[in-house]
Image (cartoon, rainbow, N blue to C red; front, top):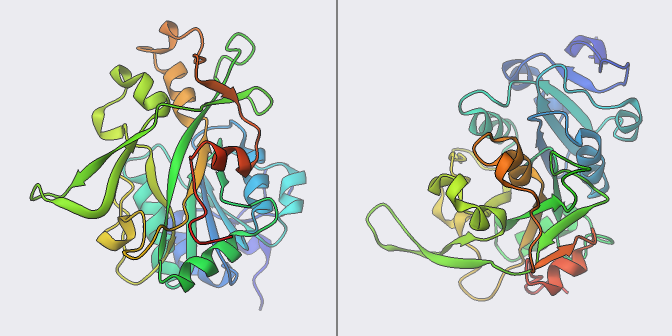
Length: 309
């Protein structure tokens, strides 16, 4: 008998028809056939903030499957579930648990080798060059033609300008970003040798408020978009076990890059008792309203199209 929505656990609390798996192990054992051909997005839910807008944004980017992972009571609205009918797979898993990031992403890698994948958290929004009229599938196809199996993304911090109105620093309408203050340092490997075509990138709120952020979490680079393969693993520092996946470009020319525009750092700084009461505003002389358009990010040099015109 063909599987139904109910075969995979309860529907969304409000009745929306998201196919649901009660645990990560259940998803691994029976969810592989539900991953449609095409790029797979993995959205990791840490809290209730902007869950619907995060899912809707990535549906609009053209992902054929969105694996939305979080505890049971972090629900998706009926409206968004209907928009993503057949494309959203809901997996119950606690994203505050130890190793949750790597456990989830590496599980999906094992389930669908050869498939392009992307991961982010709620309140994070992917932008890539010309994404207003090109899809994630088209970008991945171009990268594959360039013999690239990964795409470097920069995590660009977003924050609400008015923290009195938005005390958690999250607001789609009032979003701002830093237009300056980004830099890169050469990356060294475990033997203290320079890693070929790898850099550590810094900037944004992690740079401006570095006294509140452990040094191991100050980088803003992630390989958020990659092609899964057998034996590949994501590590806790957002790098992969295959060194070539961690490079920013081909050996022969510049490669395209993308951005993940994220409220996550601002949200954490305001919630942290050690920093929250000290921050009245995140705005400074280099703040600018976020326009929610790829052209602004291209103009600021926060991503580049490479040879993709």
